[in-house]
Amino acid sequence: MAAAVAVIVLLGAVVGIGWYFAGVAIEVDHTADYSLTVLDAANGTVTLPRDEATERPGTWALAWKGGRALLGPITGGNDGQVVRQVSSIVEGVLVKGSPATVDHWIYDGDPKRALGLDFQDVLYPSQAGPMPAWLIPGTSPKSTWVIGVHGRNADKAETFRVMRAVHALGLPMMSIAYRNDVGAPPSSDGKNHLGDAEWRDVVSAMDYARANGATGVVLYGWSMGGAMSMRTLRDDPTFIRGVVLDSPVLDWNATLDMQGDARNLPNFVTGVAKRVLEWRIGIDLSAYDQRRYAPKLRTPVLLFTAADDATVDNRAAYTFARTAPPGMVTHVPTAGGHTESWNVDPTAYENALSTFLKKVA
Image (cartoon, rainbow, N blue to C red; front, side, top):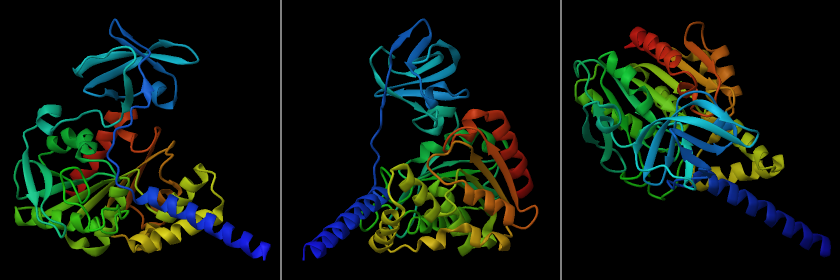
């Protein structure tokens, strides 16, 4: 009897942990995380605790509540601190003791405020209701449009970094919000569906582009936006001229396994969590293993992966690139963390992007 009770208790604990882990994966969370503390700010520099984010070379912003600065190169520091040049204060006042975060999105606001690009606030119809988007006009609406699809719990600001490069080619760019975004209609259950419902908003954005003159689209997905873009490609490849993927989720099973390992969960607990997740949101995780579809790929793909990605399992992306037909995938491995390929070398990133878009648009 005691053994049976112990088994029941153990099973209950496993299911409980699995339920919690699944809940983390589907939680909608748009709160800001200011996990750093500004140690000093003076004479055009800022001193921050040394970690992977603060010491990484490249183009970054420092954000704090009510403020933002563009960071320059490292100018000093020690084992525990890093001193970086402050290239400019975009807004607010940077003071010692401020909670802050290193922001790889760089910019905030809207395309005009952030980049000086004219744009229109538009609404595109979707199953969940009218969805907001930014539309940056190109040379002509009767051309290929680029549709930017941000990642899980992110927002349209994630797409800022590539807007200038796209605009320079004369292509319209539509940066979309989708269900559960701030200012967008929620999903029916208020949960994130890991792209399994959200991809239909990408289809709706394509319909909007087509109705407003687009002769084709390039889907541009970051992280979960990559999973959504690839699911959309499988549904309607005829209107899609190309796909750009930045740190994409190309296999949810592998990525959830990696995140379970990072939390020191035993494999069988992660397995239970994945089954709970499938049941809670009605997803078939195996349908998001894009490696299964790589050999039949007929649409050109530009793929950026970051070596230090601790969010998405990159092995699926490498396999996808290797098993696709020759010439279909242009794979650009970079340094940096999740969705930070642009930040570590903006010029190289934009050169690869422009070359790809000129070929497919």
